[in-house]
Image (tube, rainbow, N blue to C red; front, side):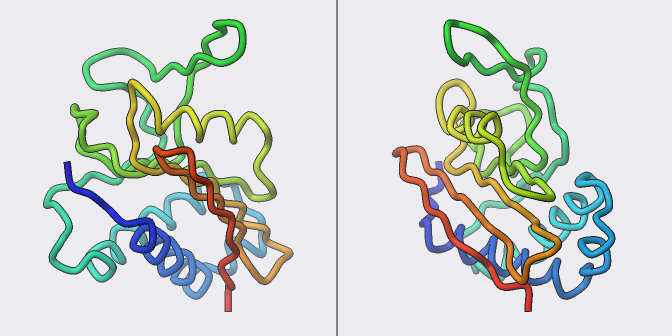
Length: 166
């Protein structure tokens, strides 16, 4: 599997979010549904990907919204406390379809701040069986001049940072 550096992932997210703020600030100001904003963010993730990783990135990565299947199986499920299973559907994922060995990034985005359940999902997506290299929680925060981002890695590191909208 291709190795990605946290700095590259962070730069990619920052560039994509700044592009979103520049091109689509009206969506944030009007507090439209998250799915609408997520669609635009996915577009900027696609557009900014090559510029961040230069010639290092693998070809044919898929960036999908609301992708709810795991390989050839049914819905993605996550075990939480006491063996309880919950269905999960990340807002945006960067992966190769039908292959859990190339899961790069899972995104959970909210208009406002992340909830505890969102954080549980993010920590579960970097573990078996999904094995995302990174998961990220994004708070769009329409009333603020920044986005709040929580980036989680497989090695249980979490980075919290803000991205200016200006």
